[in-house]
Image (tube, rainbow, N blue to C red):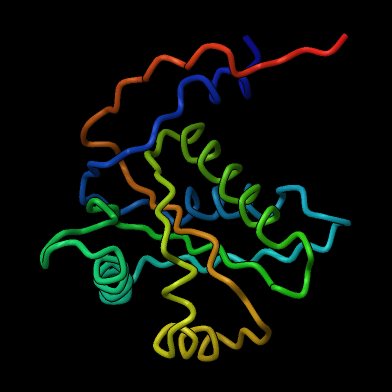
Length: 174
């Protein structure tokens, strides 16, 4: 089987990570995969903020937890030491799709590099708030960006078994 197709079959969302740091070169490769995702009319509206700083990672986790309504102490990033935040410029009519494709590329790239990953939602709500809008401004990011998602990364502590695919989801017109 082709390596890309094999990765699509094997990749699973990870929800239990080891605390070990991920080398920057691996993170850069995952980010690069996201930046090479297709985009509408090649506008390349997606940006990625790579977070390895534990304090900022924990602030994001706490904001995400509060938005999600979970009990205090719950970590919606499941202990992952890296959070890649995907945002897309709302000026592009395809920004949501562009950011989603970037997320998909990064999830597959992480798997190919031996890392666990998971798409975590609520980035939209986080980056509608002043705290994280200020973070973007501090990074010199200008424009009207919407949070698409978080691609959390790390080394897998516990594998997730594959679930069978549902039948009757492909239709042919010949």
